[in-house]
Length: 234
Image 1 (tube, rainbow, N blue to C red):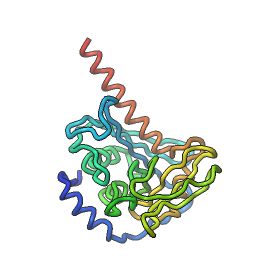
Image 2: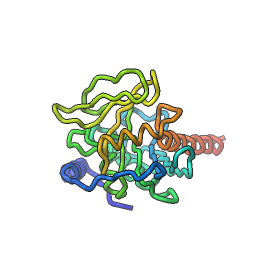
Image 3: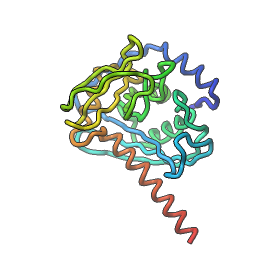
Image 4: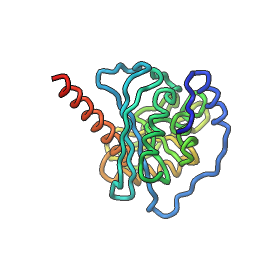
């Protein structure tokens, strides 16, 4: 496992260095590449910001067009509360561990976190990609700092998310009439590739399938653990 920052100061230093890196862009070849997804969930009773020492369940999935190849899940303890711009302190190592638990690393990874839509332009989606050496795309339900109008209601409609004059992400409708998703270029991806990956992995549902399956794996692991705890208590 890689070493993740454990203090706010350490993480900010890493983010400041990451924002200036310019690795070569990943260019998809054909449409048969492996797409991964990763997601962390917590106990339903956990507050919005949580606390250091919370139990988190991380799930990951490996997907090729039209089928899920593998899933993985792990349980671990968080190192911090949630603070905007510092999500890596809380979830970073859990996400790395669960992605490495898959039988293969994906060609590109979908992360429930931002990329350049971040105070230091280095959100967890970008940070995790750098650690894993895997291209990444962030997918979230809302933006962090960027602003932009929602796109028209038809599938595939896109509008820009901006911080000042900087284009850091996009709103995209993955299903006609559905709530748009915020899509964030991450490690070694640009906006065009990020949108291509997200739209190609949403044939039926609003959430990209690899991310949806990762979320399911995390929540299933949580449910089993909680049910087991109740059984022992009885």
